Amino acid sequence: MAIVSVRVSMKQKNFDKGFTLLELLIAMLILSVGLLSLTKFQSSIMRSNILAKERTKAIAFAQDGIEEQRSYLLRLTDNSKLGGLSVNEVDVKLQLDNESLYRTTRFTRQQKITKLPNGDIEIAMEVSWPDLDKDDGSASEATRIYLTSLISRQAINDAVAKLKLQPSVSFSCFGGSPPDLAGKC
Image (cartoon, rainbow, N blue to C red):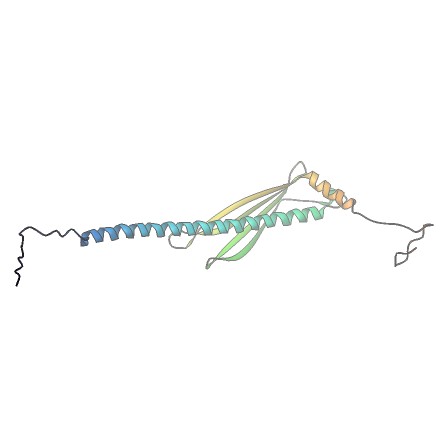
């Protein structure tokens, strides 16, 4: 039989092979603060995206109103140039209700049409909508955008000239008689 000798030392054993509970708690605290700031950042990005989407819709709504007024005013022009077109200052309010990310966003469009002293026409559009408060989701001040457009007197005169110069085809048969319904002489 062999005798095995076990030598026991009175030295302190090394327990530094793992993490202590305090180290784990501090690491979890740092990780949770980082994740919390990341979610705060993400929510602010989402809020910015919602605002950008609403601004895009408002700009499209304003541009649509300007184009409607431009085409309407240019259609009003007749052969009497600006004589048949009387534009006084007009203030009109329109509303557009639209769904935007689980809530209703109400756009209001105001337009003002003014005939300037030089004969040009100015169309001013203001689109506003209630903005949501950052904290509790309640409506706060309205957000507004403004667009203006100018229709020059020359553009109106050009539109009138195009009305006068619409293409027309007329022909007559030899001897001056008109063709029959089939277009034959």
